[in-house]
Image (cartoon, rainbow, N blue to C red; front, side):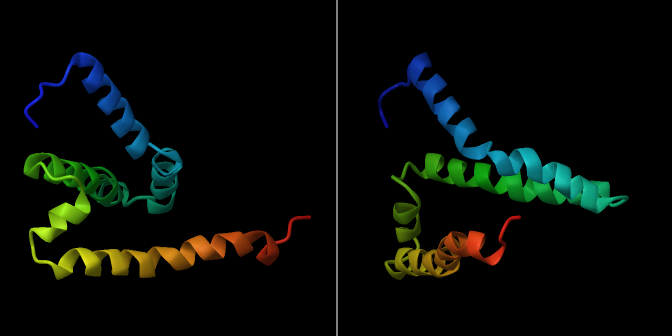
Length: 111
């Protein structure tokens, strides 16, 4: 990217990254982890910071440093098969969860 970002562009990018990383999970989950950890507070905090903050920032930094268009292009640098395998594995892992959410009201009736 040869164009210098204006302060308006940086503000929009910062707001988008904040909205992408700070969701309900990052608001509710740390409190739940702290409650469940009990006396093991520091290991739980370190684990959450690594998985909830460190890895997402590392992903954004990897795409920014390599100046690729996204994860698919970044994975193509390994070999041609890696992006397809990554997409297949993510689909196999995440698709059943998105399908099961629709049945949630029928499995746990209210009232």
